[in-house]
Length: 221
Image 1: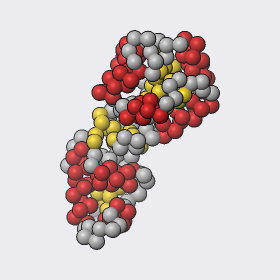
Image 2: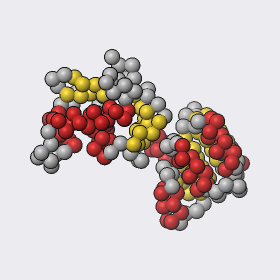
Image 3: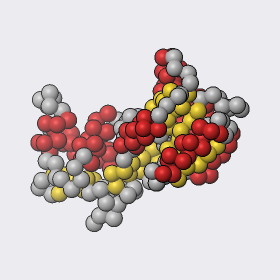
Image 4: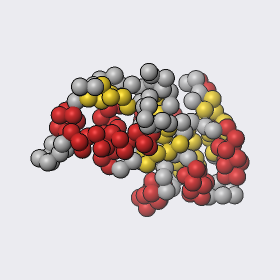
C-alpha cells in the first residue's frame, strides 16, 4: 500500500515510515497539513496516518478536506485522549484513532483492521463497510439500506447463485409480504447505480431460472 504519513514530528514520521517500508508498504511523509493535502491529491495514497496537532492546518481540517473528495481510510494519531476528541475525529470521518505514545504492533493491527473494511471485492469495486459506501472505479456510490444489504449478500460469496427465496429469507425474514418482484426491483435499482451499462451488467448477473450472482470480475461475460 501507499501510505501518507502526515506528522509534524520528524522522529515519529521517520519511525512510522521505516516500519511501513519494512512491511512492504510505500510511505510518503508530509510534515504539515498543507503538504499533506497536496501529497494526498498528487499521490493518491491507499491510507492516511494523520496527526491531529499540526503546525499550520489542524488535523481536523485536513480530515474534513479529504472527506470532501475521498473515502480513503484515515487513521488519526494524537496525544489528545479525551473522549470528546475521539468522538469529534470519528464524526468527521476518521476510520480509527491511535493515542500517542503507541507501539508499532498496535499501529500495524489497526491498519490491518481498517483495510479489511476496504477490501476490494473485484478489480473495479471496493467496499467501505464502516461508512456503508461502495466505491466503483474510485467513485463513491451511496446505496439505500436495502440496496446495500442486497449488495453485501451477493458479493459475500462471488460466483454463488442466490435464489429469490434465499434472498428474501436473508434480507426480509420478517416481511411476510416480500415477493420475488421486490428482489427484482432492488436488483434493478442496484444495477443502475453500480453498473456502467445496467442493461448488460458485468457485476450482478442473472442466472435465468435460478437467481442472481456477483461475478467479482469486471470483464465477466
